[in-house]
Length: 332
Image (cartoon, rainbow, N blue to C red; front, side, top):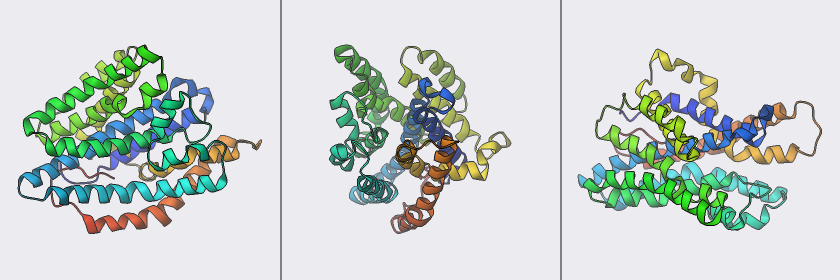
């Protein structure tokens, strides 16, 4: 893979965040179909794919004489610039608005421990339930560089496969031992199949393996597994979709995923995800005609302003901490 931006992945992000909207806002009564779970698991697959590609190239540079500390510093500075500023801006704004139930969980949100708090509570909070997935992502960023950089090369692939296998076992043990569905779903070990399957795909690409024949088996296997283990089935389907799109990137077949407005929604998808439940809750008390359309328009508008005026200027600083030339797909 060339170190280029894959535009089609932006559209996949837009679709994923749209699935989350459908569940959280119960659009057309479809919320009970767990569409938000589809969207979140798809984000995890994408994260595993993109982040692992970057880390594998960093490992190559380390093995060629680059400093481990320098590679880690570059990785974490770039991740920090992308993730922290708007996240803490949103926390500050919501704390100021004093939405119900938010302040009691604020320390957990600040420390990216929302998923742990919800697991301990055993129920979803009135406000900010969506932040659990961002906590999982941050915990993954702490674990994954150490694994990719420090394990012997021959052990990296078995370790990825082992973690993929471990995740559904972890979820089932939690559910059977405690009946605790939220803990099984939101604790980071229970998400490692989605993250790991994306990582496995990145590893295969990095090893110059031809993955073009993987898509149909991933999709065909994922569909029946949905009935046995929903999260694992979603991870397989997500990996199949990512594999199709990245293998066919730039082709006429994928032209519908290069439509500029959809790609732009993918570009601002982090903001869309962060802001959308709070906007909905603010408008909930008002009996407005077309409330869902108003919520959608308001969320897109606020996320766009946030991107153009706040996130994008900060992201320009990433140019000071650029990765050296390599073959990985860049993370957004």
